[in-house]
Image 1: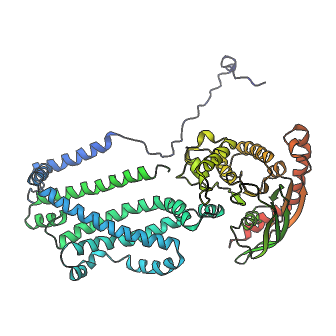
Image 2: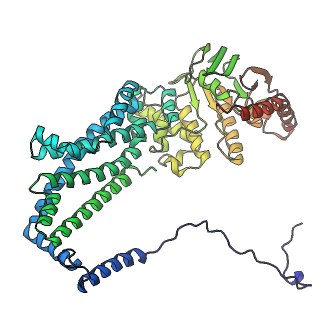
Image 3: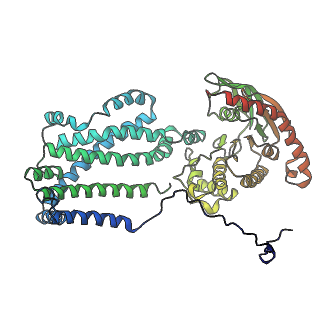
Length: 275
Length: 260
């Protein structure tokens, strides 16, 4: 019979027992709620201090307060809403066109041998061209208006979307497709019930990359030839040495980027609850 | 429905996987296929199920399918092959989707197999919320919902832990006790083979050939009982005698086959 050892019985000789010290942990990162807020506060405080003491000359690097005031004035005058609206429209439209076409091509290349054999080398050859280099050509073709900017953004997100969507389709486990075939599901039903839902996580991950590319191309295109839009505003402020306005524009871009990221996170949370 | 496998050979590139495999499975019979790992057991089942094309040979079925059979030859997969974005009921429903059924019959079939596999309370659960055993119960329910004429089980319990495996072995016995569906059961677990099957086919190491066909002489009703243990253990030992040397050689060959 087993018996639990009894402490009083086990101490005739004063045999020192060694405790096994905890030594695990596995370098697992912990959590700290205040560190992030403290880092931001420290950064702002250092910036403010440097501005107040004159280490940062106001003409080249205005204080955080001055940037805040510039933002406030822009909002009050309605100029902010106008620039943001124009930029949002461009990025939404350009991104949607490029991603729509890219998804169609990429999914086709994931599904069909011929589409892949023909399309992949072409996509790979054109993928590395920085698409902003084509803007002058698009301006010649389409004029200085909206079309050339949309074409640049659209083309810029098209190729990464093609490659990403194809990879997402590839990553759907073949065993699931074979399962569908073993139950006699027709091919179109396998595509819609198995392949596309299975590729969705990869496709949504690709949206993050293409949105970042679209934002870069938006600002670049607006700096080359536009009256309105955040990129045009930043360039104009720089030309006039209005650095407070310039930084206000940069702050807006940062907010825009964060907002797009949050939107995509919300989309993933809703569509990929099963993960 | 019965099954006849004739002269099946299979090559993957330069690799001979199966060499002239022939056997019959009678209507209502449960045949286990065992053999050393890498002997082509799963390849053989894939060929029987029409998921792989053999290099030569044929697989034919004969006789009538049971009433209400929608997918005569139906698979249960080793990795369950569940759609993670669909609920338990949704995964089972997938098997009915290529068929025109009245909504009432559809619901009735799904409810019946979920009850049979003990999943009724989990109909709306997602696969990620289920244990491995529960997931394979979904795989089994999905196979039964089409009322198969031939059931092909590809190592269905091998990704489960030992205790869950015993539970599901009993459940499979109970399912077969209700309805004798012609079945081919591929496994590397010899205990499972003698517990479940009427007959056991032993494959040699690669290229796989039928090395022996053994009858499991203990009647199915008695297999759970104490008195049958000795006979089953003796049979298992006999199977191991047939496989041991093959397995040892296969293990060494595997180390050599760096090109696989």
